[in-house]
Length: 177
Image 1 (tube, helix red, strand yellow):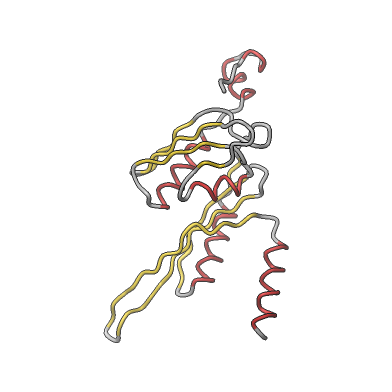
Image 2: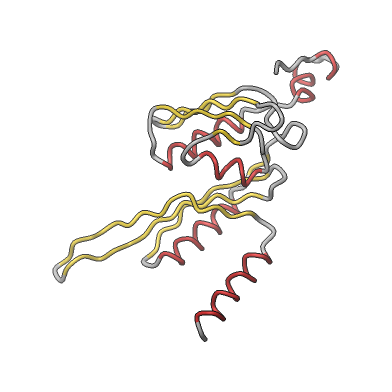
């Protein structure tokens, strides 16, 4: 099979998937053995449907494509549902923490775009959020930032859910912009 056929085959494979797959990081590790070094690869992948579902996965293997495949499979198994306001942003400001990673997510007005750094941007792109302000502090480790971002996203509650918890009508719960 020629290189061109392989590229065409990969493109078809990606278009058949109903998920948006974003590769966040690839890391090479080395184990020193008697004959030299043995390399392994780990990959972090974020998978989403663009409609509010997102998941992340970590895959490890001796080859990069295999690590990416394992990470993608794990991400699809661990998907969560995130409520999105007007199909473009989050409902309210929220904070997420994991390890030394801290993230603050804020809703943004229409047309702002995704203002987020590092490992957070692929998460928002995979979810389908187009307007959000995000700040990460503490660490730049992609593992901890992704887990902190997921913790923050799981804290988001739409007004209907808040109203149900408080025993109020949904129109009586006010979301500050």
